[in-house]
Structures are given as C-alpha cells and as structure tokens.
Image (cartoon, rainbow, N blue to C red; front, top):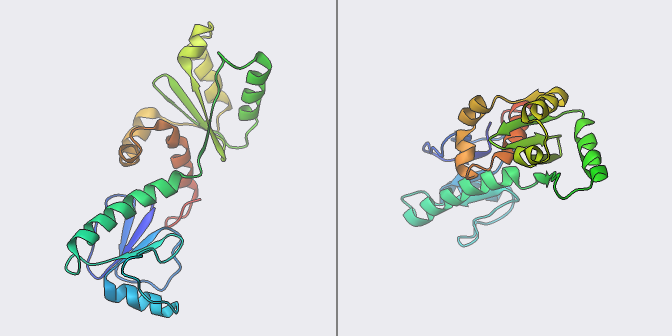
Length: 208
C-alpha cells in the first residue's frame, strides 16, 4: 500500500509504503512531496503559482522541499514531517467506540452488539485482552477480561465474534505484516482491521 509519494531527480527512500518517482504527469491520489526548488517551481508554474520559500505546502496534501544540497536542514526535517503527515492522514478519520459491559445497561449493550453483528462487512482481530471489530466506518473495541469478570467464557465469546465476522484476522501474521504501521502508531492495535481493509480493497496508489 502506497500512502505517500516523493518526486525528485534522485531516488529517496522513506521506507515501506512510500513510492519514489522521478516525475509524473498523472493525477496522484495520495500525499506527495516534490524535492528540489527547480522541480517545485516548474510544477507550480503549470498551476499559475509561484514558489514560496517559507510556505512549502502547495496543495491540500501536497508539499515541496529543498534538495539536500540546497538546504540540508529543511530537506531532512521536511521529509520526516511528510512521512509523519502521511501516516497521520491515513487514520485521521478512523472512528472508535469502546463497548463496555460494566457500564452499559443490558439493553444498550445488546443494541451495540446487534449493530456490530448486522454489518455487511466486519473485520475483527484479537490482540491480547482486546478485540477490535471494523465495520467499514467505525472500529469497535471490547476488553475480554471485562466479560470474564461477568462470567462470560472467553473462548466461546471469541468463537461467536469469529462467527459473525466477515474476516477474523490471524494475529501473528497481521502483526508481522503491519509491523511498520504499528511502529508509527505506537502499537495501537485498534488500527489493524482498518489498515487491513484499505490494503486489500483499495487501489495500489490510493486509499479509501
């Protein structure tokens, strides 16, 4: 999955999930940073605009920065900031709701689970004591130890969730596959079902 693109004369590696381009005439649907004053100037002239040295944001999700030779500090800092921006933008609209059986009434708790179970698509994963379920718009979380405190059987509960889930992810495999994302998100596993959904359902050079 590509979450950001770098356009520059020389190759720049920002790690997994980023793509380097020497140039492009195509529309790009992910955040992009243009490296080099000359290349940025050429791009902006085509848009009828001028380069501003202090304001290097040139579009909703587009930026430019200097080459290392032009300004080493700005070059390094801007690329780090761009990388962080791409990861943050990817998950900025993820909604999260925690279903708490200890504080919700039986009626509200049942309604919450009925809503989850009725989803056309439900991607779920169990990591430790937490289960995260993504329905295409919202990630729902439950803590298994809370249910065990209420005398629920952990194995049976997980089996039920797996039964009404469209996809129940293999935890070990997913943690390896999405390790780079988890490093960026400080092991906030609630993002895993969402990341899986966009990686498997969206085009190569964009995300939903």
